[in-house]
Length: 89
Image (cartoon, rainbow, N blue to C red; front, side, top):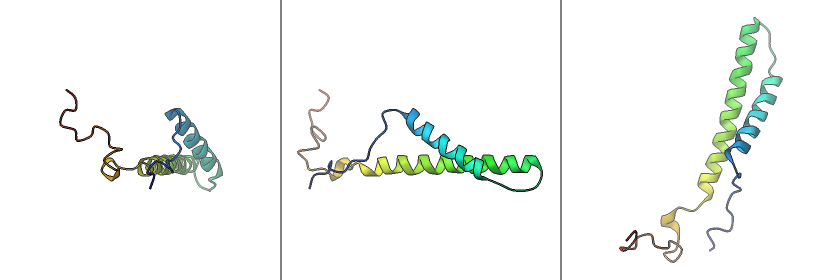
């Protein structure tokens, strides 16, 4: 079985992840409605924004992390010099 056949897509920079997360957070905050004092409405909006950003980043980073095979799961040939006694000399 080829362990690298289904690797997850990794963004070229962290800026891409941040931009998407903040965009989703902004949309979520804009959709929050409610009554009550303005400070409470703004508070609920910011909480929704932060939770959305956190959930997106957590989900994407976790998918990237878990999508790559662990070194100990690879065939010894693919491990390269890992475990070689002369490594680093």
